[in-house]
Image (cartoon, rainbow, N blue to C red; front, side, top):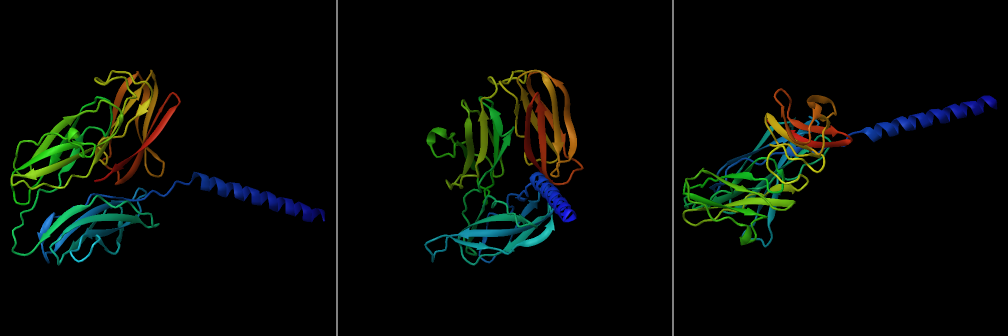
Length: 344
């Protein structure tokens, strides 16, 4: 009886130890991050029954295999509601691969094409921003509006109140007409937040405008184009800007933040280098390190005492594979980690 009781106690102890080990492994397991899919690349116009090629790049943060599928939205003249066609999944391919699909349409309709990625575990990305494709009858004059502008930001997308950013937009007109653009702050829905139309320039020109915000908040920037015939493009996909007042006024890098702050890297995604900005409210020892998706430290950008103020560091991803990386700032009890994407 004594031996049986001791055996039961030992078995119960071992079961509890195994449960603790399993719980510990579960507690520290990293969540499965969904893959990322790039903006779709492809033509913006074509004729009925033309074969048009579209491509997208998919990256898995854990470096696993990826799949991609394509979706087409359109309004049929025979239906009252928009229709959607979704392709089968292409893949598997290694992370960072380019997926391509060739498609033709039999009706002269405006289509919107987008892409979605998934990894080997089934985690799916959001659908990419759609590309608008106008299909015209063979032989008919295209007379198409300018393509939706591609907007870029010169500077970080997380900034300070009154910090000036430069926004650029490149616009192509399918018929090589001259083009003009206007920028809209806060989705361009209110004329109060629209710039005047620019002077006309040749198709393919890059337009630049500077802007700042006098209050904190989240704002969006969009661009619309028109050609010399008066045809308007659709609004570009919005660029989101986070404006913070956590630093006392704005100007030189010597001004002192009210608190410790780590900003989003710029550019992001990047290839091969990116800049990381952070602010210190007081002198302190600073550690700024970069980690891969497995949590392994791969670079130390700062490990020293820094003075109060704004600081910047650059990480060069040359020699590292595509994927998601993390950077962590530690300073006098302050610890913050952000995510960035290397996409070659």
